[in-house]
Length: 62
Image (cartoon, rainbow, N blue to C red):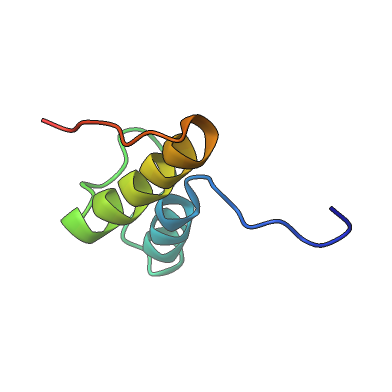
């Protein structure tokens, strides 16, 4: 409280798509470009961390 809070969202995905758009490799229309594994992993880690913080449990991934 009273301080900026860490972001637990899909910012790595937004950053990647924004970079692709600025580089002219994507026009912003559907479908988006394929996502590199590093972007998928970074986004997944954020959601898994948020789940753990909210529930106190690890989410089993298959």
